[in-house]
Structure formats: C-alpha cells, structure tokens
Image: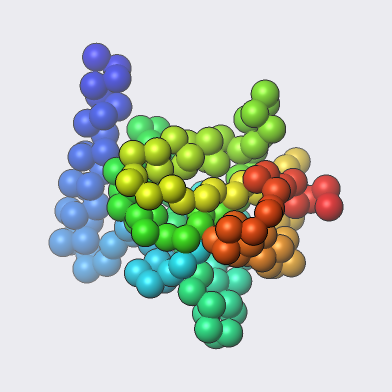
Amino acid sequence: KHAAAQHRAKQKMDQIEAEFQAAFGRSYGGQVEEYRTEDADIVFVTMGSQTGAIREVVDSRREKGEKVGLVKLKLFRPFPRERLAAALRGKKAVGVIDRNVCFGWQSGTVFMEIKAALQDLPERIPVTGFIAGIGGMDCGIDMVERAVSITQLAAAGKPHQEVTWLNLE
C-alpha cells in the first residue's frame, strides 16, 4: 500500500500544481523545473540551494553560445523518472551535482537515480557526477564552471572522470 501511495503522489503533485496555477496564475514546475533545456546539448540536474549558482553558469555559458540547460528536482521520492527521462532525452550529456554521498558507490544519490532513469532511453547518454557543498561548504561558480567543462568532455566522447569531488580538487 505504501508503494502504491508513493506512486500516486506524482499525480497528486501535478494536480496540486495545476490548481495552484489556476488560482494564482503562476507555476513552480511541479515534479521538475526545466530551465533553458529545450535546445541544450548538456543539462545539469540538481536539487535545492545550489541551483542558483548553476543557473548563473547556465546563463553565462549561453551568452558564450554554449547550449547548457538545467533541471531542478522538486521531488525525490517518488522519483520523477518519467519527467526526467523526457527532459533529458536526446541530450549529449548530463551532469549531476549532489550535496551528498552514496557510500559504497562513491557518488551522490541523485547521480545514481539519474543513471537508472536514463536506462530506458533508446540512446546512451553519458552522465557525469559531482559532489560539492558537503558539510556546509559552498558550491561556488568556479566549481560549477569546472563541472560544465568536464561534462562537455563527456558530451564530446573524450576521456573524463565519471564522479568528481569538487571541494577536494
């Protein structure tokens, strides 16, 4: 029953979002919020407070003619797998910036979930993972810039590190 209720929560969140938009004339994106993803070659996925720094880097890279986008997760459980797969389909690479560690995997939990969500797509999309901001440390613009550069290597099919701990380099 718990698993079925979790599954229904996605539909409920979409319903509440639609009601909010009808009442107030604005939307918060529901399960995921896409930012400049429509024509993006690479897309970053994140959650929470570090999204502002990533959005700034997306804008500065766009000004330079680079096709970079952002998806902000608003829901982690149940995982919005279908919405993410739709947002990331056809991209050249995906970068995931986590503020946590999935011990035993040496990566972040969102990174692991994104890799799993993309398995159903017909094309293989490289996923790069980044861990930043652990223990209250900052995830600054310079770190996000490095993450974009590494993810661009993945998009070009060049050698790159799959998971990078940005605060430790």
